[in-house]
Amino acid sequence: MREAATAVARAGLPRVADAERDYARRTPGSRARWERATRVQPNGVSGNGKYFPPHPLFIADAKGSRVTDVDGHEYLDVLMGSGSLLLGHGHPRIVAAVSEQVARFSGTTMPHEPGLALAERMSAKRGLARIRFTVTGSEATQSALRVARSATGRTRFAKCEGGYHGSGDAFLVATHSTAMAGPDSEPAAKPDYAGLPPSVGDDVIVLPYNDVAAAERLIRRSAADLAAVIVEPVLFSSGGAVPATGEFLDTLRRETAAAGIVLIFDEVVTGYRLGPRGAESHYGVTADLVTLGKGVAGGLPLAAFGGRADLMDLALAGSAESRVFQSGTYVENAVSVAAAHAVLDELAERPDALTRLDALGERLRTGIAAELDRAGVPGVVTGAGSMLHFHLGATSVTNRRELLRADVESSRLAQLALVAAGVLWQPLHPAALSIVHTAQDVDNVLATMREVLR
Ligand SMILES: Cc1ncc(COP(=O)(O)O)c(C=O)c1O
Figure 1 (spheres, rainbow, N blue to C red):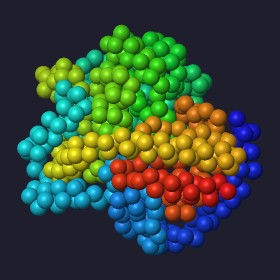
Figure 2: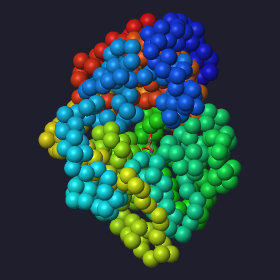
Figure 3: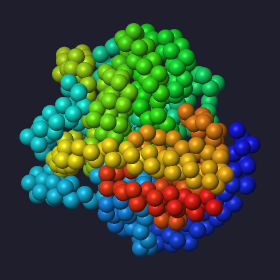
Figure 4: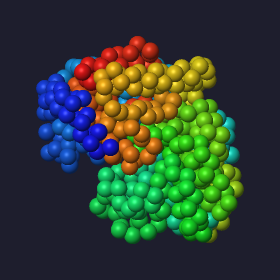
């Protein structure tokens, strides 16, 4: 695999070596701002994920499927706020709902009717007996894990290698690291960053994604200690848009049910993207708890977690002994709630929108695969529905290790070359389309990809 990867860099993508230079030449305004930013913000950004070398792109404007940078260049956006802009930038329905609400009230601390109505709508849509809002996906996963711990009286949990569940300490184990610690069939629970207690890994069992036999063995071995198994139905931001196999999710469901472990589907990305009931519709597997975020409020900060009434009620409405903490100043912010209603209204009014969106995702996936073929560049395209990524130099990517064993550097440069050519696809991040993208947009991405590969 390594040799194949090197061959891509040498033979398949000679011009991609120029990607950083082309990008830098096109974006002097972003460079200047990033340098200015480094004087007030470490590494010139607020958030690791916003930075990519040689410097991030500073955005001046956005509308629909397009963004404009501070140098006045327009980009076709396929990053879409890391998948949060399900309705595109500045959707008129969201703009109207948010504008109207912000003039009435935003943060109230007290509950309100629009928030209650949203809880009813979202729980009905996703088949969640109970639901609670949070601001971020990170809080949603953290809260779901607390519910599982309270309900089971156990502390440890299992996650998949390459699974990203937000910024909570325990979730930053075997997520972003490129070190691939431990054997393929039993990844080590190593914290990925400084600043985390080294003991944080003691609470985590790491499962190799899509490895049914290993998951079965590792869960059984620690079953008595495990409060939860948490999994992204499609490994997204650090996993390269790799879908779980049905057999893998079936195995997690079977093993967790047998051992009284809470199964959590982290659907912060896939929540509204994988079908009417997310992963449940797509795979026919029902989790005990589900987390939602990103697209549910079309780019405004709102997330949620929910599921079985017995678990949720015990941990969030039970006695002091079983009660977990979940709250926050900006939880159920009425402006975000208005945006989330607008998303549901739009999807209800356009019942074919998500099917159309999936078809666009498929068109882009098969199109990129065809472009790789045409250019004689080895690689694979992964994804499901409207989410996708490409991996140069790979022959198969079913988990994070296979992704890392591909030619990650050539993929990064190819993505940077796409940005330099007017397609905003942040290096090493998967793409997620929105319902305002068109078939023409997809064909434009493919034409740019053809240029880049040439
Ligand atoms: C699957 C998944 N879970 C949780 C999170 C964390 O969400 P947030 O960034 O809103 O904290 C993310 C963010 O990328 C995610 O992709």
